[in-house]
Image 1 (cartoon, rainbow, N blue to C red):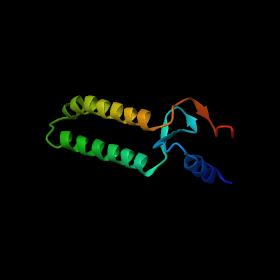
Image 2: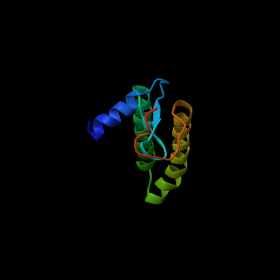
Image 3: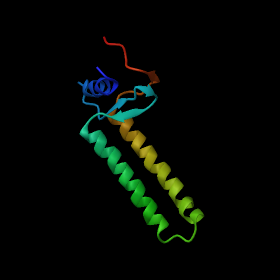
Image 4: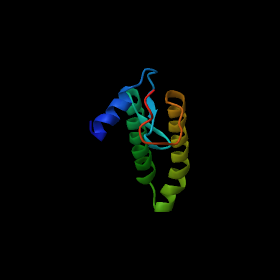
Length: 100
């Protein structure tokens, strides 16, 4: 099988129903179910809308960034919290886990 097919098989092997499975390379998560994809898509939409909300009335880039950075940090922490609660326990991984 190819790498894409192997990756899809890895994500589908999800008997616990995790919304996010640990990444194959590095530390973190990747969406594994439609709920995980919905959370990630919602996060991206909220980031864009928040930036536009702050940028449109702003008079300079620093005005935008001074508000955008702390609000972004809060949203990222919220996303990490959702991933932690609804995902596999993260750990450093480099490649496919050994088959049990």
